[in-house]
Image 1 (cartoon, helix red, strand yellow):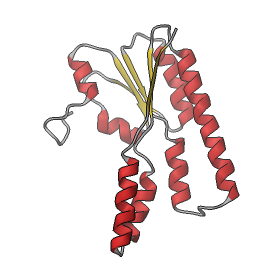
Image 2 (image 1 turned 180 degrees about the vertical axis):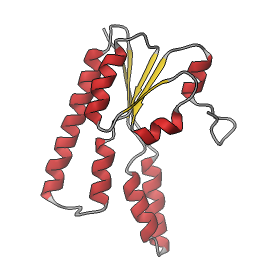
Image 3 (image 1 turned 90 degrees about the vertical axis):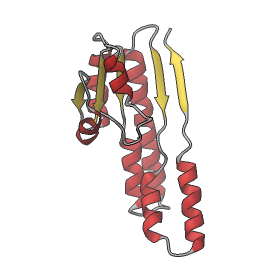
Length: 163
């Protein structure tokens, strides 16, 4: 699968070209977009299903297992379309974060010794950016949108070799 930018190549395509065994666990629409070569694709409908299937894939012969968790993004989308200041939202955010932590912990625990384990935070709150894009009417709105887009580009990568 070639990316639109000819200078960019899919990680899955590179690994497949090197004869590496890879598994991709994600939502069905993402699986369709990134499925290439002999990459083993496992569509999942929930984060919990992804973790359950991934723990099995981790213990098979794989050089790379990619799992994308969506609950936080889905929560952000819900908040962007609903009440944004509710105390219930704070409690729900804590629940989502705790569930995400548990899921990451289960994936880490399932990984064998000497696994390079990466946790990458994503693209920021895309739902909020889409909401702002639709609401932009003034130069001040455009400036707010530009700040949110720049903030959404920031990410955090955590890595550890499991001992």
